[in-house]
Length: 355
Image (cartoon, rainbow, N blue to C red; front, side, top):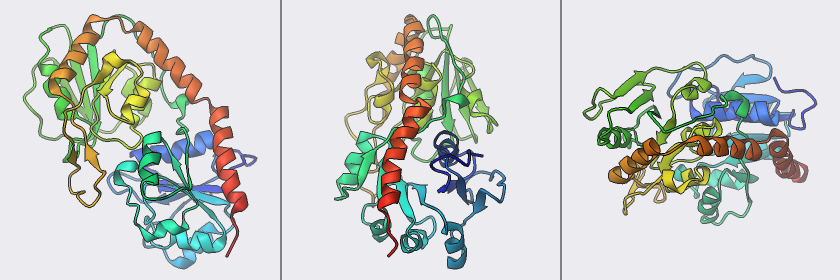
């Protein structure tokens, strides 16, 4: 539980409490920034983690207006992810109570015409690309804030020598294969070398392309996120579309070299041009999101992805590994993160006045 003297002790994160990206983001907000409360949204795809019933309370979408008012009373602000309608009335009620509202938008699903946005005080954008999309809808109440990633969750890896063990973390493979799982397997199987191997981790098994005996498929949910990065020489994460892109960012922060697509925000994390895979010249809308025109996918070039892997197998990964970890320690220094977030969110809370 965050320390009661935290400047964010009367702020709440309104998000899932599970092993999805949003659940892990909520954990970061509490552990790094020191948010005092968690209003928990029931998980949509995985098992809920338990709550303490004191600083953590359930607030599902069908909660009564009376319960929402009760849980928001006394708070300085709430921070939520992606969309304003986790509960249909929460932003309006927060506005009436004088509670500041901050959204961390995921650019790919951002619906800028939602009427509830009139009650949102600030869009805390985790990348410059995200802010560009949000501002394209006419919003000016934006700022770019580095995501408060908790480095303490990850191992400190020091990879040496040429890459031999490739890793790919797929998570839940969706209809669009947004993480590039099938592309990774296809590209790896084109490598001629017999002294390399690929481990693919996914939370649930899905149909896969033909694989050879150099490819290992593991399924299931790991209890500790650090376990994803304890082994291997390099991660291959050619995502086609990401909001923050934790499966690219996290291995970089662990000191692992990472091959990804040369497309934002992924290429904001991978600093080495030799590890950025070219994308195909076209882009396409994400599955079932034709009503969000900017929700587009940039598929990787399979041929170029194979070349990136071959390059890693022929070159020393030591300087890349060392650079990645130092880059992470500089960017995600907890004191600097708290100072910047405090500057932005405190100003919002101070200016917030009840109607």
